[in-house]
Amino acid sequence: MHRFHLFIFPCPFQQVSAMGDRGTDNHSEVTDFILVGFRVRPELHILLFLIFLLVYAMILLGNVGMMTIIMTDPRLNTPMYFFLGNLSFIDLFYSSVIAPKAMINFWSESKSISFAGCVTQLFLFALFIVAEGFLLAAMAYDRFIAICNPLLYSSQMSTRLCIQLVAGSYICGCISSVLQTSMVFTLSFCGSRSIDHFYCDTRPLQRISCSDFFIYRMISFFLSSIIILPTIIVIIISYLYIVSTVLKIRSSEGRKKAFSTCSSHLGVVSVLYGAVFFMYLTPDRFPELSKVASLCYTLVTPMLNPLIYSLRNKDVKEALRKILGKKIILLNSILTVT
Image (cartoon, rainbow, N blue to C red):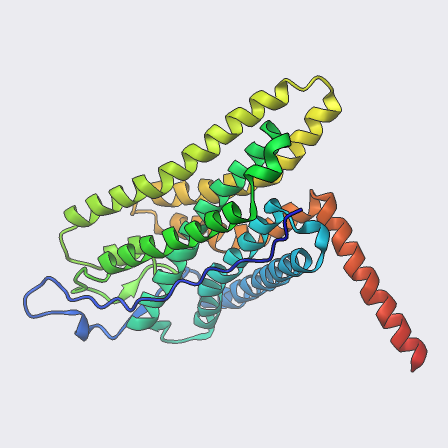
């Protein structure tokens, strides 16, 4: 049996320095931006702050709890939980890039973010969101091998392959993020400094730029084609084979068990990609809709992922009961001594 530990592949942050393409104006004149956030009445900011705080607390509790369970229970040292632990790590960090600053701005008069802060936020968010897409594709491939070739699962999903798939996800996220961040902050910001969003994202930054977008859009389309399409193709093909294999199972109990191992992953994929497509296909004249869609994959998805996997997974629930049981026994022994 393979021994797995939570694998974190660090990507060294590269400082992106960019000069504008306009004559005398350049980025050295832009020292900060203003994050407009949600266009609601000021009295609703407290309510929004409390909602963000509650959701972010659930993200921290759920994802840290999931990583703790996976790392402490020997029965969960399998490829599926290795990928799931890294998924929790990614969800935890990319939501942490967005949520704290958004909550601070609910109380801030200026709602400003420094130029370096905006670069850092976009870089880290792009890194983790792309890495999550590749990781979900790797998880789909894992489920394909487990259901379609169960006898070869242990040999095909080796420790080395799992580490390579996770490392590849972080590397692809890092490369994509460097390119995307470099392109965005090479644009000239000669108009308003107000970003009509609650975090630094590419589309809101484009709206306040006066650069020619032709080359930028061509490169963005190319990046999207080599990032989004391969992951979607891997997921779709994996599930086509999975469905075909499951339908050949004669017993209804066997089909139900096979589908249950994939339903959690399929739910996570649907929520994430659905929100991303909705956001980027929404016309620029509806910025508030884009903000709502952004909430789905920046906060709602990281909050739901641990719940989806824990509520529908017997192994995780059993490991959680075991940990809670130990805590209760320890607490009772302390109370008895005192």
